[in-house]
Image (cartoon, rainbow, N blue to C red):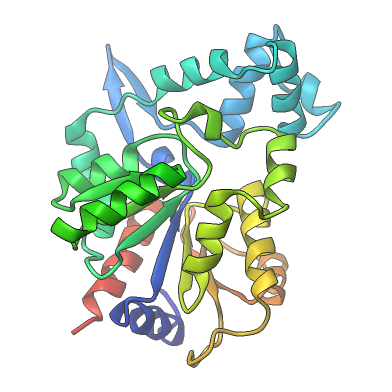
Length: 290
């Protein structure tokens, strides 16, 4: 059960239009479907790296992980393929073919669609599950991954003020040149000089971030914490003062203390019921606004 004080803080932020959901790999992993009798679900980051290892000729990714970290393996993959990641994105396209009816029924996507006061949502995922799921549950959306799309959205908002902006923070399969995949991609983004970084820094001001579907080992989380810490201090006008919260399955004292040291509140969820617990949290936030 979510701490009442945390839930109250999130409900207040949502009510005031100051909640910024950030959706990670836990969402596609919660989506499952059947193809020719085979059960599938959205791939995890580890499974993406495993696929890269197989395409490099390694039957066991552990052989590469003994030599380097996942981001370094993906860097090696790109170097071996002439500075291209197309063979890996082709694999992703095949893995991310969830039918509409499956996305429409996903509890997390249904709950996120209820956040009518959230005009912007971020995701570091490459798939289109978030935007498709919201549309299938009645929300109008616009995908933003480039500065040109930011400009187009400003025009669109004149006639569609309620459109929900989905910021594809690390690019997606429609913008492969914007995809942040390898070690050098992440290191370049840590400079906080890309267009999407400028956009994020502006969006973070005055808002509370809700991280859904991330883990402590996730490079995306490390990067985003770096951005939050650059803002310094607590959130003005907030009772708790936190700039962010994150859902964590069965958190240990190790995770809680290290997250708290970064001014990120931990929301425990059950490892055996992660999808339902995240959906319930989001529904509680939406239900708390008058």
